[in-house]
Image (cartoon, rainbow, N blue to C red; front, side):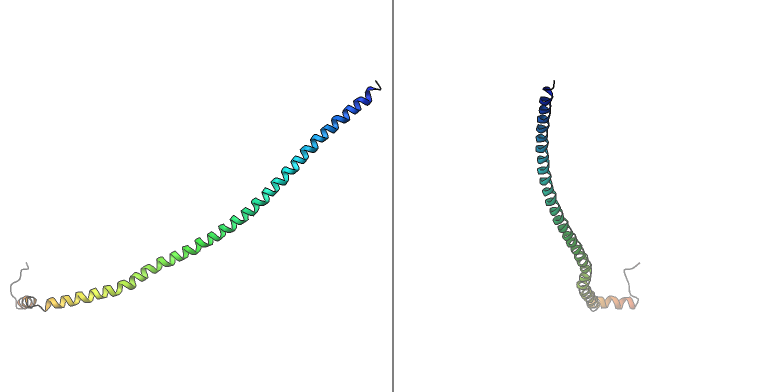
Length: 124
């Protein structure tokens, strides 16, 4: 029995060493995996910072373009009014001259004279 003890001890020690080798191998794999994941995380952080910066720039562009569009929309009615005013004035002036020209025709004068003298009229 005394001879069995050293054999059992040697057997237990060899099992422990084999177990340690398996644990060491697993630890090395875990460290490699951690290093890979850390590198990926750092890369993703950099990408996120880049995308956030681009999003901020794009939001500023949207704000600027919205302001420009609002200013352009406000300018359109003012420009239309500036263009329309002379056209309306010219049309009014032309209508006034046309009315004056109609009054100057001989037929218009004759009708006007008849109505003032109490002549016949087609009105009821």
